[in-house]
Length: 156
Image 1 (cartoon, rainbow, N blue to C red):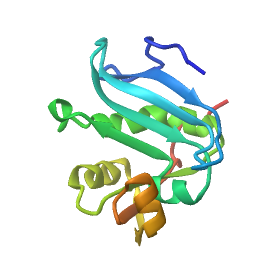
Image 2: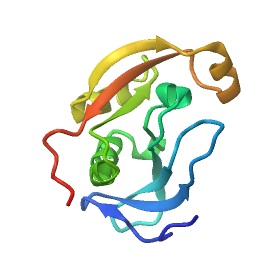
Image 3: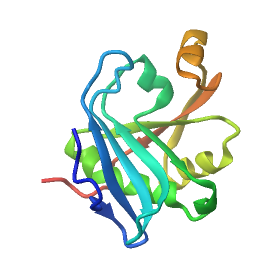
């Protein structure tokens, strides 16, 4: 299902999130409803990165997290990942989530800093089971950060 492709759905005046796809729930990874957005500089069209919000609960979500993002090298160092996460708060709350998980590799300092700046709490560092590593090509260890939605605006 395509969303309003090409039109910003969320913006903070610095970056915009442009909807790409809304993936329906599927069985294999258990991501549940999965929103996929392109991160662009405000008013621009060139992709600076991507962010996804996965609303399911599964073994894969445990290691991949509810939120996954990347920022392309020329756009790094401007806090775009943190801003993109913050822009998703209303959508997270709309779906009734009081917290979400963001995972990252232990040595991915930019993502660790993003989680800290969001106010996430490090829950634990976990070993990813070999079958999940090889099937989905992810790292052997992941830090699990919990991002609690308290102190947010209420969604009516």
